[in-house]
Length: 87
Image 1 (cartoon, rainbow, N blue to C red):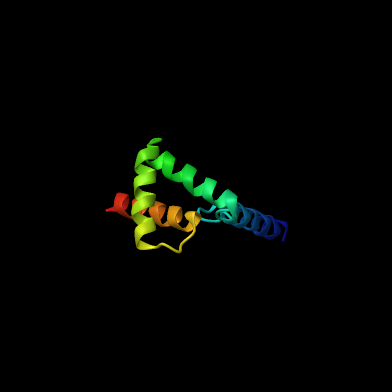
Image 2 (cartoon, one colour; image 1 turned 90 degrees about the horizontal axis):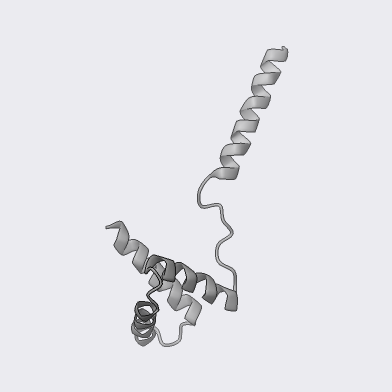
């Protein structure tokens, strides 16, 4: 009986560990002004600090989506960059 209880406890501990460390469990970007910084930093890391590329992409997206916020545009740029890198 004690062996069965030990196995159940170990299985539950392993399950908790797997759930806590699975990818994609982050809360996501913050809202508002900090969202802009979040997406900008991610894009700058992807482009190795090339702010010119970021601003050119932002200008191009702004022409297509003039009513979108800066944070939304930055997220679109990030998603497009990730999608292009996956191909």
